[in-house]
Length: 72
Figure 1 (cartoon, rainbow, N blue to C red):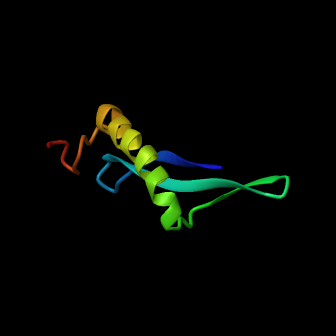
Figure 2: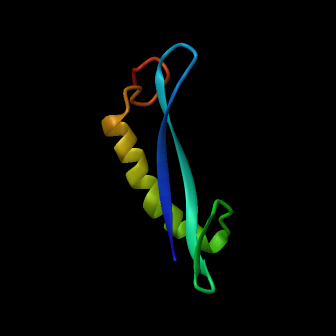
């Protein structure tokens, strides 16, 4: 059981690269591992733990560094 943040680079119509993050939870249904993007209240503390590092990664590696024109 846990959470993950998947970071994807997407190019805008203007040619800029923007990053989107998908947060999901990982759980077991019997012996089968599953994921879901539906996150209840009990998952929010774990979301905070993965969203912070995802933000930091984008801040360090993302060409936009915070907004669409590349400035802060």
